[in-house]
Every structure is written in C-alpha cells, then in structure tokens.
Image (cartoon, rainbow, N blue to C red; front, side):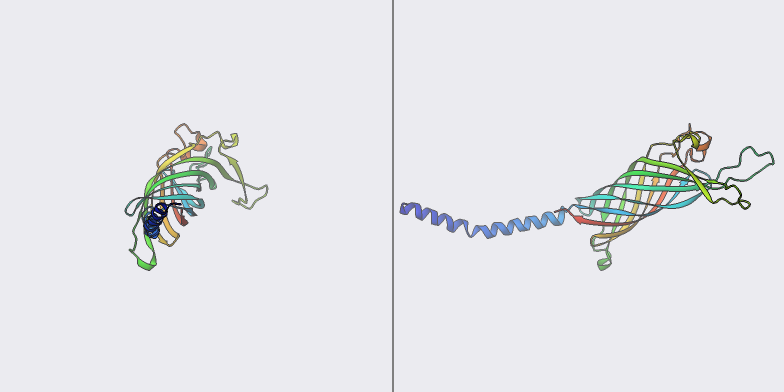
Length: 249
C-alpha cells in the first residue's frame, strides 16, 4: 500500500472514530425523546358493572362484567387517542303486568331477567394529568363515542314447580331472544352511545369509574308484546374498571 494511501486511511480513521461516541449519544437522546413524547401503550381493561335500562318502566339493576383491551396513542401534550374493544355483559330484571285478569288490578308477574352480551368498541379521547397527585398517581379522564354488536341475548322466566308453597318460584326457564318461546320479540343487533369517566393511574395500573350510555333502543318499535318492556328503553351502565398497560418498544 502506498504511503499516501496509508496516510489518508489513518486520517479518515482519526476523523471517524471520535465521531462514533458523539453519534451514539445523539441517537440515545433521540430515542429517549421519542420514548418520552411518543410512547404508545397497549393493555387490558375489565371489571364489574351495574346495569339498568332507561325508559323501560320499573326495572331492577343487575351486576355483570366486561373484559377487553386498549391502545393508547399520544397526540399532543397530555392528550391521547384511546381505542378499546371489550366483551360486556348487561343484565336487568323487570316485571310485566298480569294479563287476562278479570278481578281488577292483578299486580305484576314474577321478575324476569334479560341478559345481553355485547362486543363494544369505544373510541376515547384520553387526558393524562401528570404530576397532579404526585406519588398518589396521575388522574386520567376519558370521553368519546362507542359502537357495539350484540353477541347474545336471553330471558330467564320464573317457572312454578308442581307443588310449591304459595307464591314460591325456585327454578327459571332460560330462552334465547330469537326463540319462538320468547314470543318472537325483536331486539336490535347493534348499539351506539357515549362513554365518560376517569381513573387514577399509578405506574402501569389504573383504577377507574365510567358511565356508558346507549342511544339506541334495545327493542325497535315493531317488537311484539313480549318485547314491549324494552321498546324505547336504552342501556345505562356504571362500570368499575381495572386496567394494566405496558409501553410498546
């Protein structure tokens, strides 16, 4: 190798080698900036919920639950976009008037239970108020619309045993909503509405409370007599949530 070539290679090495640590430092700073300002989280969310139906007359609220996942993507500052997907159970109990009675007001039939299972997809705007509560955690506020598809629907009707004590009912007949035994009542297969709520986040864990309000009636106006309790009625759900998220690297 010519002396001039050796000299040029050595000079180039002297210029490049010191620049490598500086380049590595710049890349590390860039990576930390991206992690800090553009971190994406993925996780699970679930918990119990309390369900009722507005516009359905007197109903008794019941408890079910939900479980699903979420993705939290930063947008600007403390605001993030948070799509979720979850399987949610909703259940209410109701009583219908006794029909065919000729002795005046015969009261109400024993309570029936309506159970619905929905696949819900909320698209929420999430605000994280960092450093507000210091070591106690950071508040998170959620709000946004949701759409849902009904996965299952059934009714549990009390059945009188052959020789019961007066007024006693100890078994229940469960029938799908689409069953002819359910009277042919129709129920909407889809739902939509809005979600509002909040949570306290401590590290990867968050504990929250949210309200899910449906805007679509459970049963359409064409529902038969058996579906009448839910014509115009809409789900209203108060949910306690526990979530666990992790950053996507």
